[in-house]
Amino acid sequence: MPLDVILLVLFGALRAIVKAGSDKSLDAALISAGGAVSALPFLAFLPLPQSAAWPFIGASAILQFAYFQLVAAAYRAGDIGLVYPLMRGCAPLLIAATSGVVLREDLSGAALAGIMTISAGVLTLALEARRGSGRAVVLSIANAFVIASYTYVDGIGARLSGNAVSYTLWMSLLPPILLFAWAASRRGSLTVVRHVRRNWWRGLIGGAGSIASYGLALWAMTKAPVATVAALRETAIVFALVISVAVFKEKAGIWRYLAGVVIAAGVLVLKLA
Image (cartoon, rainbow, N blue to C red; front, side, top):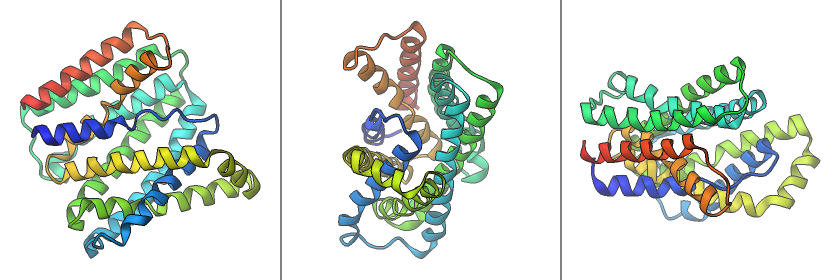
């Protein structure tokens, strides 16, 4: 895998971690809106995506809406230490297992080994979970399928668009509309407005970082197999580990350090693939 693609995806993985507030549902909508606001100034300077890409932009918005709803449900059912690793660790495995059929992309044995190693490192973090349930596991696995689905949709859409940056920016506009409409219907417009007034800066910063990192990943998917890029995106957990220990002075157990070593080894294997 080309070194420039690896470095760009790893840079994009630095999206981890904007520490979210206590209201996960509204924070997700706010960060999504921040990404859309950040995209707007650049749209006039970029070509429109090719017509073949527009159905993928619509499908992506629906899948991302489903993703955020499943994230919220899974976090209510189980410890984030169980839910997040299951979602993010299983998705690259699903993509690697199906990319030959969906995209006709043949992965080398070394590439498969690298993907499996990164996913194993991410899944190792689940061993630190303090609380879990069968429902949390089911919701997490279901969301892994959603993650794999929107990764395919966006990977294909970016390739068809003719310009991965343009695709990313246009794709960012619809999800916040769906998320805010849902939040307002469930929580009330006044609650939503109050949250936006208090936390708009977090949404803008987090949204800009999120859309930039995802744009880098989609660009990389036009240059390298989708499965390998999807796995590399999960190296965000390594950066999260470093930040949590070095900046926030959190104590890390042995499983976190082991996960970091295994994920780093997976990246090395992908580089050599």
